[in-house]
Figure (spheres, rainbow over the protein chains, first blue to last red):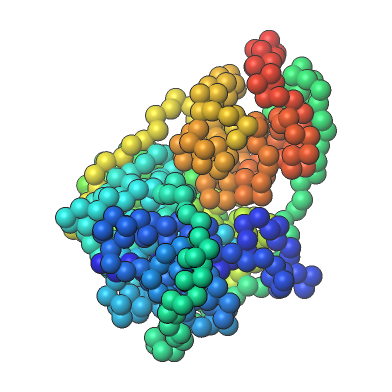
Length: 249
Length: 313
């Protein structure tokens, strides 16, 4: 089985983002970028499936500007076998992205697509669901465990009220939640080796996908700031304030 | 304008976020219909017919829909969507999985987790963990939307008198088999609709110490939550998680215990009416957003607070 792992390049999770003065978006120039944390979990899970003998090859794909190759190299340094970079000026919307990924899945005859459940920039949480719908494959969203069996995969999902267990018939699409695993660090020899692993370059046109946005961003603003309140010195003062000032108890 | 709201129910009980979704739907204007698909869902269909502002309830009674498997519901939602300008559900794990799936079937770019309706095509949604708010305009013929429940009032469950119509559908997908749900059993109110939330972070040091917070929550009729750090450390299950990648809450009172206040956590609770923070680190960022801060060791503060509440209430 081949596993396809799409990865996204995002602003590093530890950076506090700043809205641009012209309200067209957030500042991304000269800001530290990183692989989206949930995509990293997806790469790790693919590696574990391969190490357990359940997969032969792991392909890491990213769609976006030239710098996305760095994100692909992150995945290769962790242990993935090769990369595919689909060059676009900007990262496309989830629907266009899912269409691109569908073409790659079919070209590569992948048997499993493992994605992160959401990217921490747009917070859309859509691509995996859309890809499953377009392929007509079973969807395992927000998963916290995968067990491979004769039919396909027994997965556990994180849902609002607890956990849910489903049996998916292969091939399938899955989106990784936090507790699926803890990603490994790439070792220095692996980082060096990753530089020599092949990365194929494609365009959306090569795959016959139109990436014209359907949703226009009119403006981006900072949310209203919350004011810092007062410090209290003990429980009685706090309870008194909650009762008589804030009136919430 | 015709809006379809997809109801979420769990074991025959309405999930309250559906009522917030109806308020968002009414802000778009036009008629609001409600789909209730499930097993033994007549009770929910009837209560939805009394919700203020609902024009029609579409009831689809079928055992296939009992467990809300995305693929099973998607076909029904797709075929109904063609009659509507807007299709909406709450941004719960149910709606977040279903809406993008149906949107792709309809060749629509979905819009996630909106916090405001500007007009029928234009919406506001938080991005970057709520550190920015984007105003977005959709050019698709059907708008498929999930809504952030804490940003909209709950629709009144009285005053409506909608007709209930039956719709036929089956939804079995042979490739996805439901096995079981392992639900967190709790007598406490559900996290996202509780009036009081007591949350613990890495500072709790151990899962066992959450008993202190449970005691406090029970005294105030509240729910217990946690930061991602506490979930990552294995103190509590993931369904406790408040934040960018967990649940969004906006209770009257939020008490953050041993939580430093990373932006990812603030994303899930900063719309709370009153925020109290208890932390030994006087520089913890949580104090910058809290109404009342208490710079104290939580293991001393929480029992003291519990005693104080006992004598004050």
